[in-house]
Length: 519
Image 1 (spheres, one colour):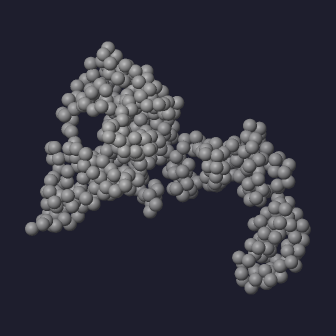
Image 2 (image 1 turned 90 degrees about the horizontal axis):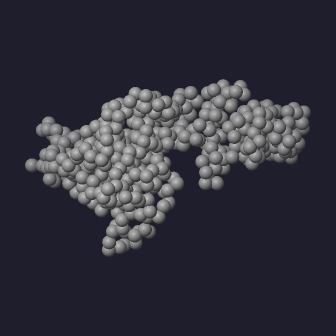
Image 3 (image 1 turned 180 degrees about the vertical axis):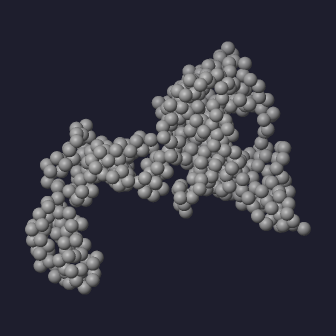
């Protein structure tokens, strides 16, 4: 008789591999392809005797990589080990010329951390109105990356051999391992997005996932409750080398569906030797078997005899901690609380550190010219994510690179907020300010607006004349407004604005029209 599964609980832990953006590799002076200066190097050119494992070549630790790892570890609330060491993880594969990887086994650099993962709204963005969940961080340890094996030619052409590129071999790699605390694909994806943003914010990695700067490996299994009360734990599946949020979500959701079905077929349960490694097929939207997963003893770890233990004293630890800025997750929550920004807008602002800092500078300049802080936060977001983002996108840049200074943008936003300039005029002034950002001085925005005849004319008598003239030319529209079709007033406003040459305040004109017509 086939047992009945009455409930399924998804359990997911996550391993994340982060290529650190140092100039040099983890244990050699060879340039690292994870740094923007060397990412376009031709294949097999970023090599030296250490990377190739030639006789007599000795590794030397990269201090910058250690400090970036400590920085990320502290952002994850990890304990930084006072003493750690380097271990050899032995395996033979063509992408690792030495036939072992220098890693960390029993004494990781960072351990016992945790992060607060916000609840999510219906669109997957953080929802700070509901309680967060704690996600444990088991460890974050340093190692060196392996090279690349390509089984098809660049461009996707079939080949009857494999292509080996060792440029990536030896690149500093931070492996972050979470507790199995996730209960849905949504939670994993949000955590992954926030982690990527945090690592990029800290300058630890470029975080370009298509280039392999961050790779996700979820460990997935299910707790199956049967009708007879038994609890079955399905074997853990580790899905390797996912480099997009879409594939990360897809792999987890696929396994959540498939593991109960597999158990009904084979009755295999979690235990020694039962863990398997699977890949992800994007085209078929399914995982596929690669191999049975090795256990730690299969790698024959032992301390690397060529590297001395690493000692991190309190002074060094605190110097690194002093480099921690306010982190993206904290800023995101603050923007939602203080400025009332939607989570989507707040998330967009913290995605790039320089854009985030540009936004905060605009806010401070707005506050300095008398705008209340909460309103300043909203105004600044509207301009940074609106006009700045649009102009920058047209140029293949980011919002903070639109060409305008925070000071000029704040003064422009204040002019529009005070009704001293119309929308059309504000757009023209924005472009003019972007064209000459180097000459930014207090008051420049208003002076330039006056020079270009963009300031709104505050002449009630002139406004009355323009309105009367428009009424006379549009009697049917006037009757429509009088009969209750208030939307028709927009046409009258547009005609008045034409007569005013765009120098009238559209809102004030509309109010005057409706008042005059008793609508």
